[in-house]
Amino acid sequence: MSDALLHNSMALVFGWLIAGGLGAPLPEDAALLAAGVLIERGATNPFLGVGLVLVGVLCGDAILFFAARRLGPAAYQRKLFQRVLPPERRAKIERAYERWGGRLVFFARHVAGLRAAVFAMAGIHGMRPRRFFFWDALAACISIPFVISLGYFGSRHIDKMRAGLAAAHHYVLLAVALAVLAFITWRHVHLRSAARPRG
Image (cartoon, rainbow, N blue to C red; front, side):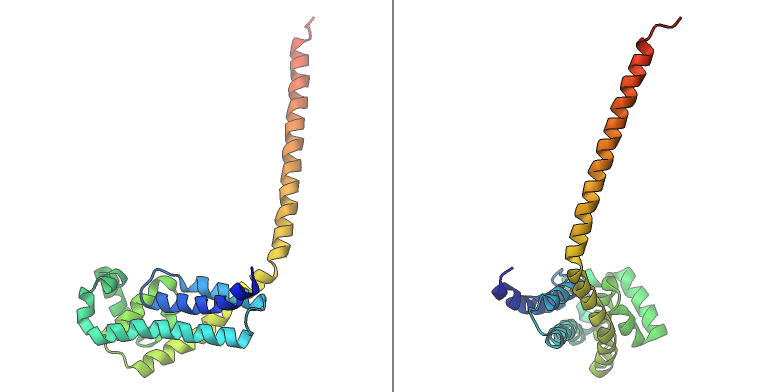
């Protein structure tokens, strides 16, 4: 990968996160793992990379939250929110809000399939932005470094993993060759035994 592409990739990660906040089907965790790989490869300073990703994540969340907050209950008539909040999911999240309140935003940030629905519901029901961003940022400060670290250490050990897979591949081929040789030997002995006259 060229240096120019490496150094422009963090901008792509940031754009990926923003597009995900606009409703594009782009998994956030994939961008965070990519950021970890880019940091390990020296494409960006670790603090700058984590900070940029954090801003991108919170901006994406803000887009969804404020769009839902502005529309209010009318959001349920929009296709995007109908996809994110089908009636059965909406009922479950409403019950969870009654029980957990703002803490649900914290929990939802760690669950990819629940995140967008909870954030949209928080906006529709008029949660105060300060309260939303408190819980969202608190959760992001835990989940983002964790997922980026997975990408970082995964990238660091990928060469070892490739070497290990190559070695395993050779052992598998050797085992198959020995199994074929053993089968041929057994069949040869079996056929000779069957052809030998009994008396």
